[in-house]
Amino acid sequence: MKIVTLITDYEVSDKANRLSVVVGDAQIGASVVKLGQKTLASGPIDNLALGNGAGLRGKTLFVKSVVTDVNDATNHTSLTHRFHRGTEVRDFVSMATVDEEGDSVIYRAKFNLV
Image 1: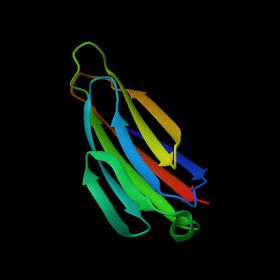
Image 2 (image 1 turned 45 degrees about the horizontal axis):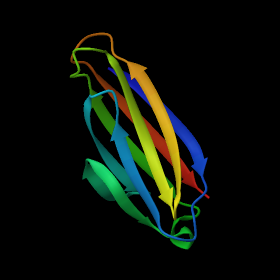
Image 3 (image 1 turned 90 degrees about the vertical axis):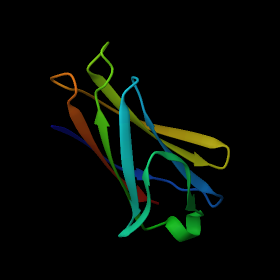
């Protein structure tokens, strides 16, 4: 099983911050989102409220996703972490190709919130 890791800083907004995790390429997947040690959500992540900047700065957001290749047309997988801060949208895209039909990829992301 392949593992793809993303580690980066993300500048939060003083307004509402939200996260969606989008599985691409007509594949399937699910995620677990943690803020520090606290689990915020699991399963499909769509427009998850994270909080405002003051409550997020200095913390770490962890997202672990498993994407499974179910699309017979391709072994390519992709995962987008889509952050909404106010009206602004920022995407972080990761990609991997599985070796065999039906294989899975573990996507791990660590966002240092600043």
